[in-house]
Structure formats: structure tokens, C-alpha cells
Image (cartoon, rainbow, N blue to C red; front, side):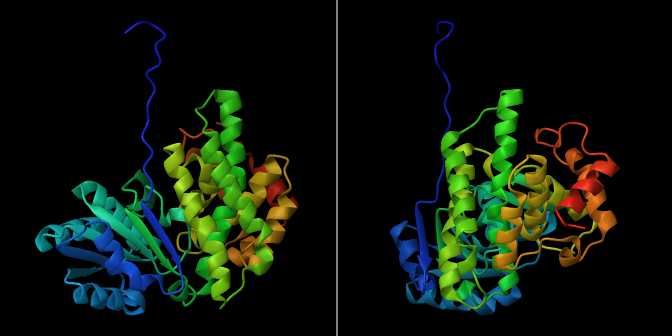
Length: 355
């Protein structure tokens, strides 16, 4: 091959069918048939989500001639991932169903990758944008790792099921998508300063989802199925933007690093999306953008905008800001290589009313 010949190539994997709306869960058997799936399905589910949706899905599949084996599990950890993969082998499953919140879907998509199987993503809540993505967050000794996983063959999001989940989860999912605003600024920053590979199409999708969520913040309310309908599409498309980019870059920047730092400093205090939303306010200030617009949108939706609302202390926010740059040293953001000083962190958090 001559020098200078163009050899670049990359594949983009997407869900082949995204079904969202009232009563969508009833279509699971038909979607399986449409995809040519057969044999035994292994359903990854939690105790609560089995009652909310798992039993109904099982009954529907049985009526259409499918065998269903069930593994109830907890958080997305390597221990539980091993349990799921062992259960899949013992059941001789031919495909997987991830039914529940983010942890069940993350376990399904990771097991699907490891076992070379297909899986369907069936969310019962929408707390973050991983519903349709090929990335999974798996805990290793309580430290969450973002890993390449399997893109779901299909996504079936029933708004009548999701609206029954605690509203806090939906608000967190909206906040996670809004935080694309600063992830994209970080990505553009890295493109300019580090010549990092940049996908305009992925960026456009991620920006569309963030702006749509902000523009519709007034319409997202508790106990309204229409609010789920408004929010679920941007949440799903946000996940798809990662498939276009081939990484989590369009949806994860300095605000996510702040969130992951908080996971280490104050584990279990707040949801991932909630932390990303608060991080987005502060990182937007650092970028010189309209942080008040972010803050106002989060308030309208009912997502946290302060340390108090996250259930953490002023000191923990400052520590997370100071240490966030160490979380992913391979990801260049507005925090730079050196991070923030204690004084700068306190100033930023105070000005943006986080503390």
C-alpha cells in the first residue's frame, strides 16, 4: 500500500429496534420473534423489577413458546456479573433480557459481550442514558469502571411501567442527559488543544438531547406518563450518540469525573445522574457558559442543584472538585492535568450556589 493511502475504518453498532410508549412491554414476545430469537431466555432482574415487569414479560414469552430462566441480582459488580454468566451457561440460554434499572441492564450488556450473545434492554426506570448504549458501569471493589459492552439488539421502554418508578430516578436521568452540555464542551476543548478525534454527528446527537431536555424542563413532572414520553427519547438517543462516537466522549466529561470522585468520597449518597447535573453547573461556569440555564432547568425538573440536596457536605464537594482530574487521566477536560486548587474549587462551588 502506498504511503498516504486512506485506511481508516470503524464500525457503528446501534439497537435495531427501539420501541417506546404505553404498553410497549406487551410487545416483547413479538420483538423476540421479529429478531429470530428462539430457545431459552435468561432474564436479569431485581426483586422489585421482577414484580413490576419481569413476571408479565415471562408470562407473555411462555404463551409464545419461549423458555425463560430468571436470575435475581443486585448491583452491577463483577461478583454479580459472574453469577449472571454462570446462570446463562447453566440454563443454556440463547439470549438475555435486561429488565430493570441501570444495574440490571449493565449486567445484561456486559454478560452479552462476554458470552457472545444478543440481549434486549427493557428499562423499568430511566435514571441514566445507558439504556441504549454499548457502555457498562461495573463496580470493582466498589469503584465503578466504564467498560465497553454489547449494544442491545432492541430497546423496549414502556412509559406506563417507567412512570411507576420513583420520580427521583427519572429526574436523575434527565440531569444525566443535560450534563451532555459540558461533556461536549470538554470534547471540543480536547479537539482544539490535543487534536483529539471528534465526531460532529455524535456531538450533534448528544447536543440535541441536552437541549431538548432543557427546553422541555417545564413539562417533566412526577406521576405523568407524558413526562416519561418526553424524557425517554432524549435519554435513549443520548446513549446512541456513544455508539456513533465509539466512546462515551459525547456524554461524559469533567462533570462525570466529578460524579465518580464523589462515588469514592461519599458513596451511596446520591444518584449518578444527580451528581452529574450538579457537576455540570460548576463545569459550565468553568467553561464560561450559561450555568444559570443549567441550574434553572434542573430545578424545574426537580433534580438537585446543591450539596445539601445531594445529601453531602461542602467539604466533600470541594474534595471531589480538587481530585476529579485524577479519575480519568486519559480524558482531557477543562480541569486540565493539574486540576483545581482548594481555593478555586471553593470559589466555583460558592459562585454557582452548590455550597
